[in-house]
Image 1 (cartoon, rainbow, N blue to C red):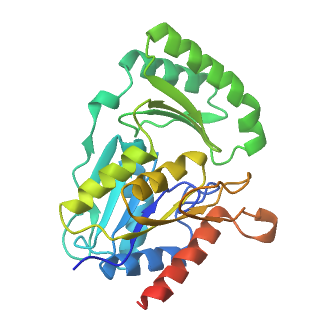
Image 2: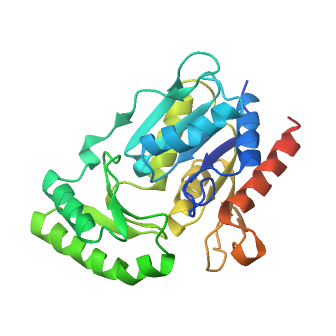
Length: 280
């Protein structure tokens, strides 16, 4: 039986708080788990690593009742890694992590980035869990202002190292909390294709999809699904910027932290509405 709905979700921002780097909302965890347990696929399509999903996201869903047989998958590092669930009943966990080594940066660039992170260690740390990309991430205790103040200098250093090492197939993508160095072929569209491949091994893809993200790149997964003929609604929770004119439905909501509405709060509201619609 084809599921009525699929969820394809960015993680940082829409699901895990950019302030705490955790899935802090129990209600969001409960609703995502209930949707998955109803048979609707939930796929995380993120720049985060499989390790992060296995430490910060999947355990929260398990607390909400997620089982290894529920249709939940993870696509990490913008298509560079992917996994299914495994484990005994009631103890779901990340299974074997597949990775595309053709997307991995050269060791020389990895080591250079590690040295840069060490030089700016009061502001950022080197994310050693990444397998096919590089991330220098702002410490949780560091203010956004301090991170954004040094971010251009760090980017310039990485640019010099890309030139030095000849890693011209790698690109730099700054986020609100990190500086990512990723393969030019990676991205949320690739992540969407990986997601469809994963669930295709088990079920027919639903015709209707809900996607969510907090960056311009996240529109790419909605575009990929739309171009494949699916009915897509994309939730855009970027911190600023106008709604984009797209051939699919876009819900644009700007977080208002002063009013107590962060990116994950907004996603939680819409996911709860989806659960209510599904009557589960």
